Image (cartoon, rainbow, N blue to C red):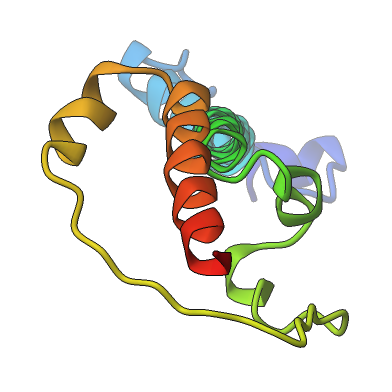
Length: 150
């Protein structure tokens, strides 16, 4: 009979006492903890950081594009005001693609179409302001209109 049976123990005793855990075994046990619990958390934090970085870089690109569009619109408005100051307020409110599609049309009962080539016009137009050029052109065409009525 065994000592356990004589002592009246109903369960078996282990063959040897449990030995202390080695550092390698502790690392493996803790490594499983890291892979199971910590790594998914770190991955989610990194994923969120990546998404946030992408969002902020796209936001910066959008803000830059909006600034560029505003700058281009100011240039177009200045150009329109320089070329046709009497129509600038009306034209600035519509995109160029809709200028010919507006419902309000202008009609003249009597109209003369006049085509001419003014010598030195290109050089002159690059040296003076748009308003001065329009005044000169108004004087030229007013003179031609006056001559046509006589």
